[in-house]
Amino acid sequence: MSLAAAEMARDHALEMALADENCVISWAELDPILNRATNALLTAGLDPDQRIGVFAMNSAETVLAYLAGLHAGISSIPINFHLTAEEVAYILKDAGAGILFVGPETANVGLEAAAMAGVTTIIGWRTDAPGLLRWDDFVASGADEEPPTHQPPRPYLHYTSGTTGQPKGAVTPPTMFPSAVSVAGFFQALRDGVALTAPGPGLAVGPLYHTGPLGATRQLGGGKPLVTLRRFDPEAVLAAIEKYRVTSVLMVPTHFQRLLALPGEVRAKYDVSSLVSVPHTGAACPRDVKQAMIDWFGPVLLEAYGGTESGTTNMITSAEWLEKPGSVGKTLPPFELVVIGDDGQELPPGGVGQLYFRDTTGRGIVYHNDPEKTAAAHLRPGVFTLGEVGYADHDGYVFITDRVSDMIVSGGVNIYPAEAEQVLVGHPDIADVAVIGVPNETMGEEVKALIMVRDVAHPPTPEALDAFARGHLAGFKCPRSYDFVADLGRNAMGKINKRNLRRPYWPTERTIGG
Image (cartoon, rainbow, N blue to C red; front, side, top):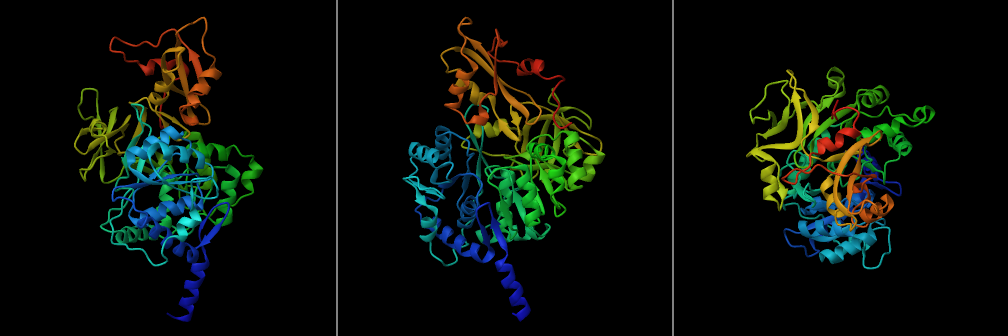
């Protein structure tokens, strides 16, 4: 190696690889940490099919836990840090977790959940909660040498709220998790992918338990520096973009709205010209919001549509969106769009029907431990739906107009009414309940419960119902409001037409994506 090359290598080693609000880790510091953490996992006594749960807010340690799992060839379970102990315990049991990582904010709930699920190894950082193995001690227990790389890589197991009231695990698909025979091949694929992106750091502002933000940790594994923020704060995001010269950051439309709500003089303080790519996903973005963001950040927005189960099925650039406002873009390989009408027949361009995607690899989507749910999502093998209605124009651009399911999307987070309904119907004063999504200017939708009480002369107070719900559910799943009704309109088969229940709350028929 020439002297100049050696100096360049040294300079690169001293550059930032990973940062959060509390620390900055260089590339030279990152490598030995990952070696020891990976070796510690490999000698932790996990069975071949056991997984590690990561139940923590964004931090450098959270990122390192995920990366160590990738290097060890152990599947990680990203767990929503808002969940209750009971909800976390269900996921740990269903996924077959053998180790749980927690942060200071989740330590107590994590310990309770682990005890319920029979998980005995709980590793935590920045906390002295009794019963935890300290992160620093866990890392120190691992050998310094390079860990093996011959083992196969194992994809994440993401849990989404279940329409039947229980969370369902979705195996990360190959479109988001490169297929490889070995961990060595997997990380080479990550490096190849990062080489095609703009140099400079990525920024993770959304919770890493979501598939989109979690992708930034894989990019770090491929050599792209990463800055992660504990939670989304609009001015702190702008400050981080300027400070680190961030080139990419994934957001959801609620993030855009909060950024645009900043006073003009605050927005003008920060230089965001380093941004090259701002993917957004999670929910439909109002057209005026997206236009305002393009006017501010430039034509760097890249909208992705898809699901945890499938990965991205459609994508549209800023330039395309300006020509096709409201579209989620063309369908990407290996998927092909199939629009099915009410009569079960395939529709031509312009025909509105249920959106299905043909996976030309034949895989489709897979739900963990739930062959019935997997089968129900498919029209036929390899042809699946994400539960939405729409059409493709004659140029192949897809527009989404409605949802088949009753899922509520609030601030980019999927909320399934059945979970809250199952809890609330257990309240002694409730005879029947339906949970629906109603408009929220900032979040897109919010959760509302329609309640039939047992004794109309003595109804429970909304405050009492809220306290009851929060005792069993994570806060984001709980209704924001409660309306008392005389009838929910159940038919002879016991079904409710939620479209009818929603109608009075929406000024016009709900349209998603336009």
